[in-house]
Image (cartoon, rainbow, N blue to C red; front, side, top):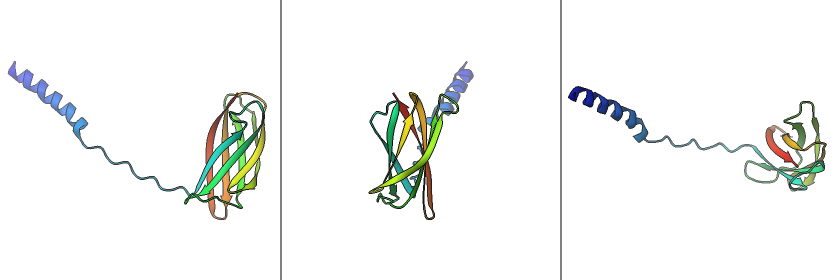
Length: 129
């Protein structure tokens, strides 16, 4: 009986030891060469014309000017409902394009930014009411 008790105790101890191990520190993230933020007018976005405003920053947080900014919108719940175009520079690292959301629901917005050798692509989820 003592053997079974000791065996059970040993197994329980072995199962709890990994929980006591130190956790690995998270790897610091590398700064992305281009950061993109999305704002909409109106906010929240509604069916109809919505201005998508992309604020584009370099890795130091400075506005990125003179970039090529392409936007693509794809309705997540309806295959074939998509649109794309080139956003125009507004100044101060802001690029805007007007999209006509013909249907409410979940949309995936993909923005591609290029300036010289710098390139970035980022996706946003947008709920149109």
